[in-house]
Image 1 (cartoon, rainbow, N blue to C red):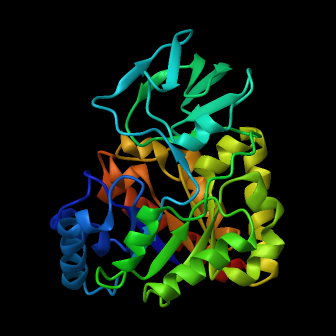
Image 2 (image 1 turned 135 degrees about the vertical axis):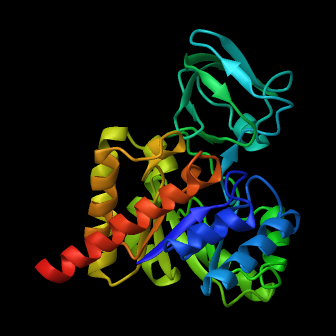
Length: 330
């Protein structure tokens, strides 16, 4: 199996990365929704040096912005309390123009930061949206926004995505995660772009993180090299209790068609603050491996967590144990 972490301040030094490679890490994901590739030179130098020290030929996964909605840059985190009213757009929290121009209906649910925060739309005007806080929390810059069932369709690739692709080869990228894939046309647009910018060597991994992607999975199979069952946004677009079935179904389709897939998000979520995972998390990782995932990907556990090395160690040990169990029991 392959085992991945995500870059962030918690692991962005050579010694920690070396330790993560030493326990079995295959490579890292770089989330380009937070910064351009050209601003990540120091992190990537440390990444390549640490991999060389550990004797690993690393894989570097670029995770593009894609058709994703995110909160803009905030001067400082904003505390949203249950029952508060909050404005999105002009005079309030910065949000993408596509969210404003869609003129959301009253009662539309908005889920921020992988559903950690929930808002209900009260009214939508030409340049802002008034909401009430249904489930509060501390909101940071660049966190995700989901509007389940709204039908908002941003473009497949942003201008920032194209700029990042133009530098992919020089920074040693090996893989590309394309967010919110909805149709074959999305993946065709990605293929055209990587060919144009000399990045045709990238392994294209389509992220399944909305209803459209799940519904069209059969049509998407020929156009991606692999798929990522990305449970963060997928768990915002679906009722959370439907997420396990969606994961199982996507895994079954990929297995049947011999298409590689990986599983990401909240695999060892408690390890952002704990040196050991919960029993449920270890079972989740084990079962994802049994379902046939070729790779497992940590996100916040390594990006901002207090125990990035320990989290990677638990991920690798659990994944390898699952592999051994399958060899013994078929």
